[in-house]
Length: 185
Image (cartoon, rainbow, N blue to C red; front, side, top):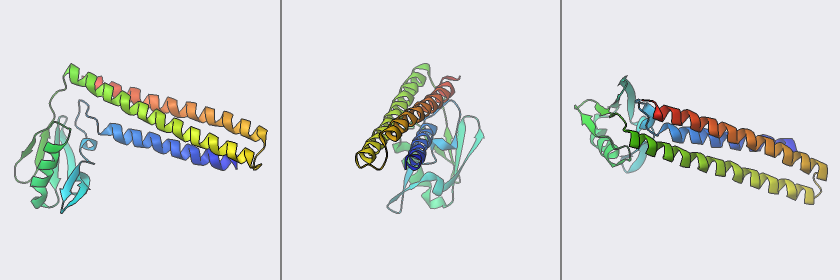
């Protein structure tokens, strides 16, 4: 019973880390990355659709993103979505492709982005702690219902603490890596 619970918990915590990595990939660094705009919602026939489903996104130069819509009629809506986003980028449209030139980040902007990263890291830590709290509650309920013994409960709690420590370390490592990317000139 405890092994299954721990396996499920580990899966949930790893998905928290994956979600954090996906979230952080959308934060701009000094280099162009398709992840910056892949999930940008574009109004496509009344439904918000991720940009990656409407266009191919490439990086022809280190500071340029090139977006080639599959359907040329979506060019204007893609431009509107980019302008309305928090990216702060102005699209250049030549009729066939949209180019996004990424300006060099200022020192102040880099520090602001690092603060955003720290906020997202804290959200991930809180999420992992909430998972731990729920699982510990379940384990205590199992013990009350005599499904597991008191010793098994104690072992489960210790195992849970080891797991949460490992997950928090992974979250911190992801944060350090992203911060290094942002601060790199």
